[in-house]
Image (tube, rainbow, N blue to C red):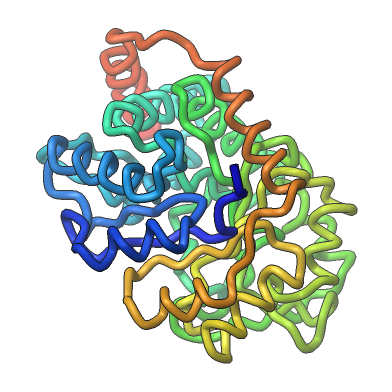
Length: 343
């Protein structure tokens, strides 16, 4: 069976169009990513997930979503629970580190249960970026704190909760988005910190979490690493991620439709793969962009196929049975921590 394409696509709406079915069948992307525009109700999402997998003829095609909590949550009430932002858990570390870490884990288990129930197999979390004073608030309360060890600890619990709940976590944004003074959705952030500063701070959580199965790059220009190329497109930065940070999981680009990147979509696709990323991510579902990306995409490499298989095995080996008591346990712990924080 030929390898699928080294690309993950979004789709336009609540169900596939005839054109999307045909395009996905022909281009055979590795998987798909869902956004709020694709999620109306549990029954509708399940049906869309089934349609997407049927379009490529692979019942195990990865289905991704961004369900961090807080302002980055594609599934929202009333059909799905409100998930607190990472920053809320970070605040609890001041009153009880062990209980805060447990709350992160329980929250991740609850997220995983919702996702798995819909057929969604990959969550683009945890975020291990460390904001600094003066940085753009694109990270803000999405971060687990301002100190590398705390961020590593809480991001680890988030990742493990997803894994134990049967969902693949995606570590992001490697090697660190916290210093960005611009939103990479809108423009290219440039980080001028020296390499030793980056090693002591930004890189630390990613190094500590190098064993997580999937990861996502940052669309940031780090002048200490590569003065010309954004990290996602830089062989130098990708080599650092693989060698110095030791990350050997499946490496996705961040969304290549973001304005931090320049050039045509074919050029971006080629540059992402040439740099050493395993998979190109494209999210907006726009036909013209997807057609151009598909024309430049390649099949997954053998190494990438092995990383996909390794992630799936990790989940299969670690998955714990569903536990209906987790929701009540989380709520009790959350309320207790909020009371202690307010005291």
